[in-house]
Image (cartoon, rainbow, N blue to C red; front, side, top):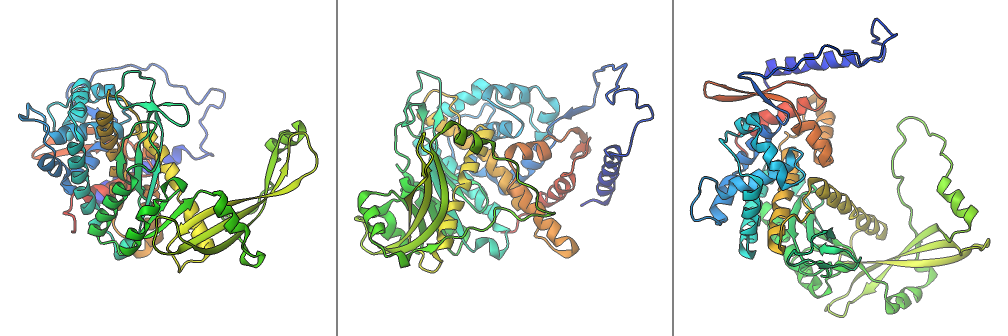
Length: 513
């Protein structure tokens, strides 16, 4: 990192820390703190600035990964480029999401930001109507071509990671409902929740949180439909990257029993939930009591200072006062047995979690015992039953990833048919992947600040999208052309500026493949 930039950044940090010091009072305490007056506005003549100075950093990363070239080589939607290329359209929509864009119409705000255009070296960018027409050109083979181009950049982003990164790839699969109020959208249907819309399938990598596959489907399709094909493609990408082992996880809708033998023969580890059918419940009931062991969960967090008194449980008090049905978890037991699904030719390991419950029916004062089973099917014979249960529970993190994709506006359907909305979802989810790839570019921790550097990389990788936009994208910057350089001069400081400058220096270097 440049020494001058470091000293300027630290000077700004010192100034802001001094102003925020709780003992730094103004001279006159009789007046409010917000005392600005005699404010005047002027229009700058030559200087231009953008509130999204981080877009230059992301664009440098995109160019370093070769994503524009990969898109233009594989995706062919235009016979003549007048003047936009396919990569211009894809990056235009993805960058819009990174700059607080909530819909295609927000592209007009980007088009009118002179400093934003200068930061990208563009004379102009596609307008909202043109961007929508671009998405409507997509057919099924075009979606595959765009996904292939994204995978090329993904492999380059992974290539510089340490050997420990490639120990195991954990792939999660889940479906989610994308509701729409439109009445003329081709491919929409009514879901099992009674909502009109689409039912996209998301396959994600738990290691980094990025989206490996995102496929749009009609709203009435089951969650697991087409999942095996997308999982196979994700496995191929992870193998090409050099991951030494691969683990697949999914809930009860993704048991995929007809594919388990094939994945097992490929050396893939899996852990899927199983529905508790009458036959499987009998199987669990027939196990002796000695087969069950207490399941002890680790604490959710470690107390950093001293334990605090827990507040009163207002919700529980209302349940008891009004006599609602009350179900309380008493304890958890875990057991295992061999089990062969009908579609499989070999036995697998069935992990059985028995939850002992205290139940009070509505209006009753006496509690009675009840129990419920939860089943996990796996070919992992090395881990303990408790470890498999905890790993299966960790799959719930994918729900947070889906929530972040909603924040990116990737799980929305602004266009008029199934494939065009699939294209929009895939392109917009690229914004979320770019956040993960940017975090991976941070150098490996070392030296006397090893722990701090590791925390910075982990913090950026797990950061929520809105926090990422506020910290590394919404960075006010003056855009200056000087000689043969394009300079983005940062105009404000935040606590992530040191990481920002470190990334800026890192992405300018050639990637190590």
